[in-house]
Length: 496
Image (cartoon, rainbow, N blue to C red; front, side, top):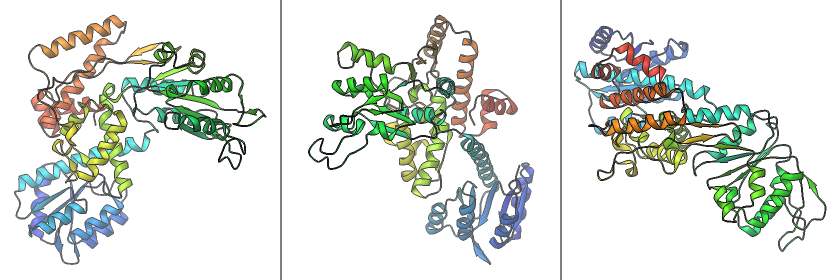
């Protein structure tokens, strides 16, 4: 492990902290002023830098707050603990505004100081793992079985030009899937053009799709290329296809059939070489029955169907997505990325997310602005995530992820837990387990034992970590397992 860097002009402070941390098997390196630290950072390699920086605030030759600012510019993920004998509001505010992990007033209780440094070490290690995963992450994120089915389908379709229909609730990321299909297809070098057919007035949609000739209607001063022409050689993504006006559906069917269309007011057919990917949150079969959607167009679009799971069906992806969106929000706002506690992650994972991934992204943007500290606690989350006592504990039903023509795979949801992360008591959770197991067995799956065991262990470990505020050793003791066991399980289950 990388060392804890201690910066203080007081030799006694350095000595006491060094000895206390070495007793905890935490290596240290000490400095007397900020200038030495900055010089060491310049020459240090990736493995030689600090795991955590603990700095006094007032020293000869430089300020701890100035050091904090310079360090954060080059090492934004490094936890910095600021110490000072001047326990005043201005110092505390300045430290937190500069992105400090915590503020430690002198004189301090040594065991509490060591515990604070250990928390910073654990946070630093978690962030390192998260950054590694983020760097290797594709344009879409997800470890849940339902998302892995989607990724496999994208891989199988990578060399195909076949028309794809993406279904899923609003906010679940249908356009991301469309972009991924384009990126990994032979058309990746061509344009990707997206249009939301529900967002454009009916009288303008035809022109948007197919373009118009000069003088085709009032205001058409010049010829305009439509989205089909703009996407030539690439991919056209038609979002919310279920809302397309009925008469335009006929024109779309013609293009999909022979690749030709006419601009509005035009007399010469235009040839289009476009792969069409459509998406909808609606039940198109029902729309066909109601006479609102052409059956022949439905079958033309529905060659391959990809169902994108709702976020509540892939709760194990919430931690990864949360850290990703917190990092994105911080970049957009030009601030230090905030970290999130395990208790807050448990609260998020048990929220229903009617707005799906888009709602989680908005929540992360909200807490980036509104959370008072660098570490987001459960109490810092927006009001809509507060558990309601009158409501029954959240339960989920196993969803279905389908790739049309290639079979269906059931993707069961996580075990039922209540809205504050506590496992149900009595026989209620056992009844739920029995019902879940029966449904999986009836479905014909042959991995029921492994699937339910994985979900049970994941939820048990996350709940224990939330109860101990992320302290793994204490969580292992409460669960009655060894330290190595809980570490191994966290890695195997992808709970880092």
